[in-house]
Length: 168
Image (tube, one colour):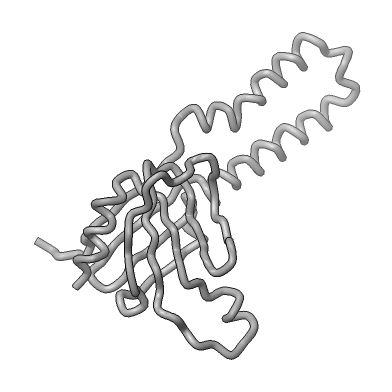
C-alpha cells in the first residue's frame, strides 16, 4: 500500500439545480428565437451572443465551481474550481488555532475578504475557522495578501477540525 499522506479530503460541488439555473436561460432563449423569428433581426449576432454566453458560463463554473480541501500530514491545500487555478496552501507551522463555527451563514457563495480574514464559502453544511500565526512583513503587497484568519465551509466541520488537529 502506498501512503499518500492524506488525512482528510473533501470536495464541495454545487447541486444539480445550480447548473440548471445557471445555464437554464439558454433553452428558453432558443425557444423564443424559434417561435418568433420576426423578432430577431440578425441571426448571426444571436448565435455569437449565445456562444459567448455559454463560454463565459463554462469558464465561471470552471473557475469557481467547486471547492477541494485536502489535509495532509504537513499542510492543508485549498483548491477552488474545476481548473484549480485558485490555490491556497497552509503549512502546519502557520496554524495557531482551529475551531468549528456554529450557525455559519449559507447565504453567500465564493471567496470573501473581510479585513484580515479570507473566507472560502461554498456548499458546506458548516464552517471551520483557522487562525494563523502572525507574520511580519515589510512590503505592502504581502501586508495586503497575508491573512490572520481563514474560514472554510465544510460538509463535516467537526471531522475537518479533527483532521487538522491530528496533523503530524
